[in-house]
Length: 189
Image (cartoon, rainbow, N blue to C red; front, side, top):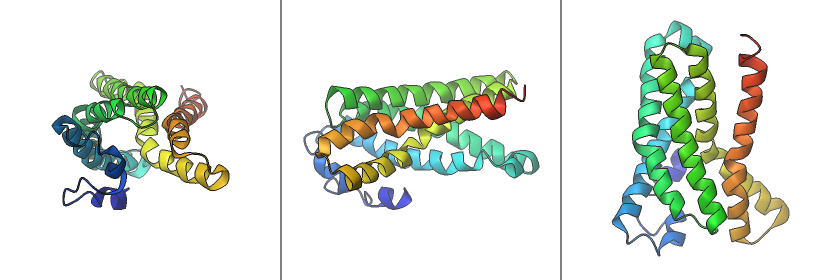
């Protein structure tokens, strides 16, 4: 993901994904949303990976807290709202736009619920919502994996791929998150 992100810097509007977004790149709000999303999504990915280490959670609680705040602020203030803006302009038409906008709203909602549960000292609820939030964070990776796999196996038209991975990239992650929650979290209670 880091390698994908750095190709946009120094700021370049004619590289990689932005090459197919030339009809929107002249909108200042799109450019701002795109770069905000790219930068802060990487922060949330890196910070999120630290949150599920039992060692960090129990022995290095300060690191867990700092990384957790970086994760949540990155999503709530920057990555999810900017994701909603760029989701509105998603390739693939209405269904892709809907998928990416729902992803952004769900990502914001689950992250917000995680922070609210933490403030109420409801740690299990916090953990459950963090699992859901991180499942959506991981869509940045799974979307690309599904895209490569589908193209390799089926070789469909590009917009067909986009419409499929717009949903598959996060819905399957959320289903897996719910299975993890049911199997490992709620069964312990």
